[in-house]
Length: 73
Image (tube, rainbow, N blue to C red; front, top):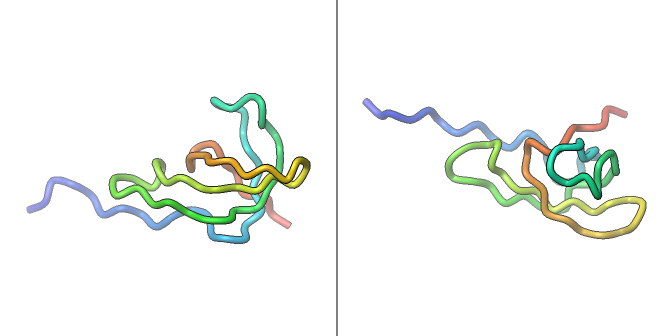
């Protein structure tokens, strides 16, 4: 019997609008952007990384799953 749980799929998809929550990246806190790509972790969905293009500055940054919240339109 395996000692690990099956990894959940990524919470966000390419094209989703997201907001960066104030955790580790206070510089970008509360900024909104669009998910451009996903780098899945083999261990946990909370360690998935997302490339997000910020709307206000047009920068692309890499953030972890736990730093993002989906914007419901």
